[in-house]
Image (cartoon, rainbow, N blue to C red; front, top):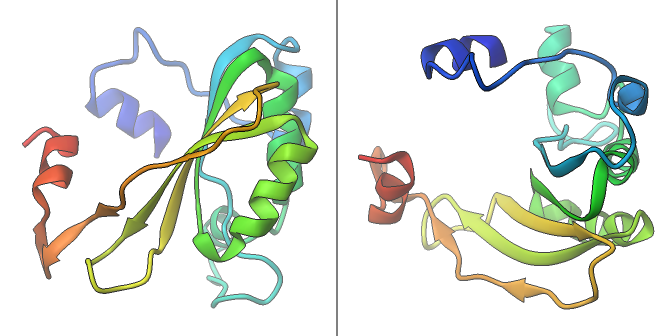
Length: 162
């Protein structure tokens, strides 16, 4: 899917997709060799949620082959001091996420909750963390995705470039 996105967006000359085990990322790349690491890790732990019988989807959505500590550990090893770790995750795991990030020296600096609709609970959290950063977290205004079913908010249209 990543290769398809690169091709569809015409950025193959600037983006190279590598596939591997996140627990072995430090064997694929030199330590502290990145200014930015982004991640959309598996959200679900243990028996939480319905697990897809299709193995690749289950691995992408559930902590089957790695957990959040593996993700934070890899980000710390790969980031330069002062580098940014951007991730999207689920709010119900926020306490664990914050504790783990700090355990691995990834200081949460900015947070934004994403709400599907203005009157619903947030279903995603966006985080910007800095390797070796000083404590201070800014909580940004909520991002609302839909005005009504099938109709994005103006901000989402701006993000998508419409």
